[in-house]
Image (cartoon, rainbow, N blue to C red):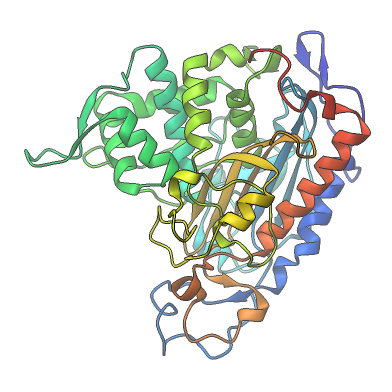
Amino acid sequence: MGAPLVVALLLSAAPRAAGQPDDLARELLAAVNEADLGALADAGADAEACPGAPFCPLVLPRIAAVPHLDLAVIRLDGDGRAREAAEVLFDPDAPRGIAIALGPDLAPRGVRFRRWSLDRREAPGGATPFTDADDLLPGPARPGRDFMEPYPASLFKLLVAFHVARRSADGGLPLDLPIAAGPLPEAEVQPVREWLGRMLTLSDNAATRVLLRWLHGHGEVDRMNRDLAALGLATLRVDGTRPEDGARWAPGEIHAGAMDVARLLWLVAGGPGVRWRTPAGRVVTSADLPDRARTLLKDLLAEQANHDVLSSGSLCGVGPAGIPALVPDRWLEPATGAEGAVNRAWRRDVRPCNAAAEVRFLHKTGLTWNYASDAGIVESLPGAPCRRYVIALVASAGTRYLDPEREAVTLHPCAVDGLCVTRRLAGIAERIDRWMVGASKADRTGAGCAPRSPP
């Protein structure tokens, strides 16, 4: 592995030449290709047709084309400095994937991000050409390869939480402020910290709507988008939500590119030195997220109840282990060890997987019929093999896509045993995690597995 990427005050990550991915990028490409997502079975675009027999076909057809997938990883040393970073993209035009160049700020280069359209996805090769109106990023058109960024599903709640945490730290939104769930007198009233905790740890949609309704009422949604853009995180946007109730979370209007999510989480991870310099010349450091906000976010992300996308503790014993992370004890039923925090049919004893866990995964998942995402900070547990990194995946590989061995179904496995997403995503993460352990040993970052200095 090479020397740290931090040079003087500015992160210096030289853009890769086209077709010449570095070691980490090659590993990401290999991990996704090994998963062979093009072999998935497709339960169809209609989410209501398959979950109950007899509406599912007896044998599901194969996916029409590889999912759109955006995967980014930043490998960190113990103090939170970047050792290396990579981002890879997959879509029907690049079924084997491409590693994209990253600028000195780790932002992707040579990609023209386009708004998500399920209609366009359902007609690969037959869709009308893109126009400037399809651009995800505002401003002048950026030259580069077209990539339609998948809808992030509930991962977008991380953006809302990041803004709420920052505003709570500067006094703009006190955590103890009581907020009603709606305008009626009988509406539930809870402090901000309760709504925030439910949104992040349980992915509670009602709590998210409450916070968005309050943010809209105080001009904070526009501010959130402006603040994220000012940090140079141009693909992180929450548009189109309804001011009156915080609802309407539409594909094509809410976006979260994987590398921008990874860089946001890098800020959450903390550490000394400059993170990056934005195109406008602003220097971004850990101070852009106050320590109180960082602690709040890390504590909540560490309490995530859903471990079924890149980590598999909630599905203990089924398929790849993924990132070998702890499922928080607070969600486990003492008598059975089963996770009881969410309305899923998992009902598995999580304790054997927790006993074998090697890391904390401070993360947020997103999962709908058409989309799957997961992003977080991986930190080794005491005594476990050392690795520390940020990983973010956004993909059009949601619940509708089943592993080939489950193609003969009359009832969707999500309704039977909680297998709501292909286990091949966890396989991707498992291979990356193993590589991270080896990379840390090779360059001796293992000595810094635990932070050596305050964030």
